[in-house]
Each structure stands twice: as C-alpha cells, then as structure tokens.
Length: 398
Image (cartoon, rainbow, N blue to C red; front, side, top):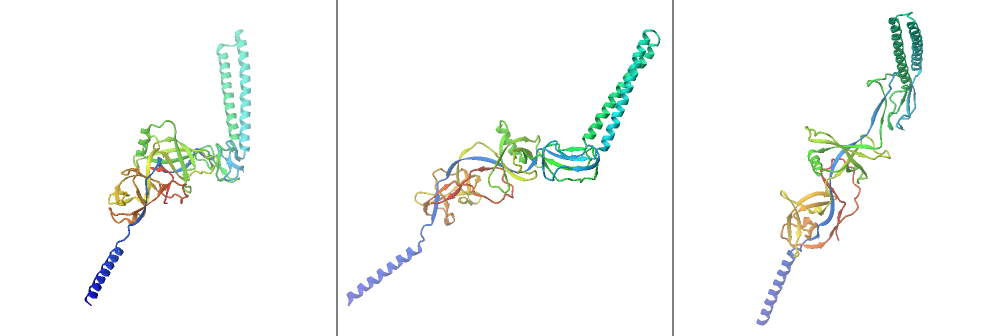
C-alpha cells in the first residue's frame, strides 16, 4: 500500500510539469514572417518637372485695313486656313471709284507735264535767237520740274487707291486655325488702325510653344552645366501617364522675376496633328543630369523615426536592425536611396507592420523588386515636384 502512494505522487508531479511546459510553449508567439529583398540597382535619370501651358507660336487678330461694309465671309468657323486665303470681302465700289479718280488725276498731271516740256523746248529754241530772256527759260524749266512732281504724286495716289481696293479682300495673315466670325455680312466695320473691329482670330498650330516657370535654383543648375545647343524636353498632357511628346528648350527669359523668384522658359513642341491647342495645361520634364547607378527600394519600405527616415534590414540570424537612409526622388513606387544602405542588405519590403521593435527576430522570406510597365494613372491635377527621377518599376514578392 505504501509503494502505491509513492508511484501516484510521482505520476502527479510528472503530469504537472508536462502541463506547465505546454502552457509556456503556447504563450511564446512565433517569429513574424516578412518579405525581404536586396535593393534594386538600375541606371536612373534625374528630371526636373514643371507644369505649364501651351501657347501658339503665332496669334493674329484679323482686322480690315480699310473701312467699309462686309460683303461676304469665305470661311467656316474653326477651319484650318492657309496664309493668303480669302476670309472676308468688303464692298469694293467706293475703292474702285477712288481709284478711278486717282487715275484721272494722274492723266491730268501727265498732260500738264507734256505741255510744260513742249513750252520749255520752244523757249530754249527762242533763247538761241535772243527772242526770249534767260529768266523766261528758267521759269519754263521750273514748270517742267513741278509737273514731274505732280505726276509722281498722282502715281503715288493711284498706288494708294489700288492698295485700298486690294484691302477690301481680307486674307489670312498666317496659316493656322481660324476662330469663329465676329462680324456678319452687311455690317459696317472700321479699318486701318489698331482700334479697328476684330473680324476673327487665327492661331498657328504646328509647331506649338510650351511655356513654364522655373526656379532660380533650376536656372543656376542648367547654366552651370553649360549645355551645348537646345536642351531636350518631354511633355505629357494631364490625362496621360507617359511623356509621349518631345521637343527642345529654345528660349529662357533675360531676367528673374524679383517678386516670385522664377524665370520664364519656353519649349518648342511639334504638333503636326494639331491635337495640342493653345491654353491647354501640360507637364514637362528636363533632364537634370546624366544617368547614374542607383539603389531603389519600395517607398512603403521606408519608415519614419522622429526626424529620420529608416529602413529595416534583416541579418542572417533573423534579427532586425533599423538603418537611417538618405532618400532621393520617388520612381513609380520605388525610392532612390542615396546613402545609408549597402547593395547586399536585405530590406523588409513587406510585413513591416509586424516588426514591433529593433532586435526582434523574424522569419524572412526572399522576394525581389522588379521593374514593370508603367500603369495608367489618374489625370494629373496638382503640380509636380521641382525635381524627380524617371524609372518605371514596382514591387513583387515571391
């Protein structure tokens, strides 16, 4: 009976110890699982981005050079017109009458010149026989010169009236897209001055200007780079995700605006299809420097530690260590890291929220950062940063 009690006590103790062990193991949480990858190394190009507006290279307000009644309109609203194409005709009859009067005055002046020359010849003949005085001959010679001047004035008047008749045909001064007609046939319009009635407007369509403002810092950077020739520029519209149009920077203003600290710049963009219209907004980018090798990590892998930006690196034993980094531009979900990270560091790219504190050990699963085709984005409605980089990439895990 005594032996049985001893065995029972031992069994109870063993069962108690086994239960405590199971309880302790149940209370220990497993190591969190995260995805890690080494930084993606690629050649990237820094860009300076700007928001601006398209402007026509030429824009003309069409006015009549002479006044009169509108007789006809020879274009449709919004047409593409060629330089010299007829747009309006004014009633030509007043100009035709004025031209006929000027020609009659020319004929009269020519007749007076013929008479004056005949009288001068006769006087010179009589002077040889001492029949007239030298004074009379000089008078006849002056009359000839006066008649010649009258003929010249009459010729000028005829040319002026011919121009007035030509100006009753209002033609397109440039090639481009015409606006709607501002004046209908039958209306009397003034002409011949800057205060004349505007009949319509014509704006050139190809090529087109893209005008934007750059900071003084951007101006200094480009001047110190001492670019040779026109700088290439890429432009996209606000509903486009990619920079589909290219051009050249052809103008920089001669002074920085002291009030805002910016300077006006202009690029020339081909527009053969006429799709770009003056007044449209766009976003442009200029190459800020040559391409360079950079390390990139997902922007979501970067955390904030007070005033620092850090990434979490996993060692071989699974321990996590924060690394303060110097960030560069954002590249489609990837951030350029300029310093603080090594090429072989395993950075947590997924599951960062599971890392509660430095020094904790994790179960690391290998992943990788891969560039993929840029996806379409929503229309751009806010100005882009002053400087960024271009490289299309996203993150995928294994």
